[in-house]
Each structure stands twice: as structure tokens, then as C-alpha cells.
Length: 138
Image (cartoon, rainbow, N blue to C red; front, side):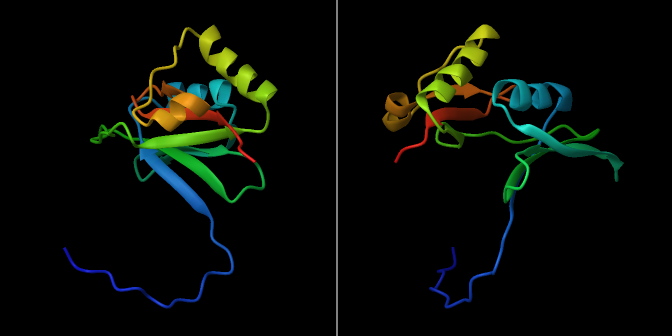
């Protein structure tokens, strides 16, 4: 593997983050991330070169998630340390969020990293990828 030497670069004046992932069932992923996690549907596209997709996040933020589906099934896996972590603003918001999962019959599962078991709850999304719901730490 090549060695990466430290680079002296000028930072970008602005950068946006998009995390993209392919799925087998766009409808169930949209429901999970909007109804349970609480993200907003920021937009979608249909049949763009054989792909359908959706952008989920919050208005006026510099990040969002993109989920796509096509006739080709995804070929990926995650390990127990690959997480999406969602920080709530308060104990009340955290408790409401966890209650939404429990009302749908989803149970928290232990996280590999003990930190997350102390400070949050881990759930699996419909594709089997782990997410953490936690409280923003001061």
C-alpha cells in the first residue's frame, strides 16, 4: 500500500457531504429514515440512467443521505463499527426518538463499541446497517 505523505493544501471555502448507498427497497428505506429517524425528504429522482433515488436530511444543512435502487441489487456489507450516528438535542428528543422505534416493534441491539451502549441506542436499518441514536454531548 502506498504511503500517504502529509499534504499542504488550502481548505475549500465550502464543502457539502453526501453519503450515498444502494438499496433493494427504496420505499422501506425512505419510511425508516423519515418516520423513525426523522429525516426530511429533500428530493428524489426516477429512472436517471436506470436509477431511482432519494435525498434525505434537513433543509439548509451541508449534508444529506442519498439512497438509490436499480435493477442491479446492491453488493455490500458492513461490520459492527460501521455506523450512522444521529445526535438528538435533548433528553426529551432522545426519548421520543427511541419510543418511535419501539412503537414499530424495533428493539435496540447492543453495539460493539461500549461507548454507544452507555450514550445511545443502536438499531438496524432495513438493509441491516447499524445506526445509533444518541444525545448531543456538550
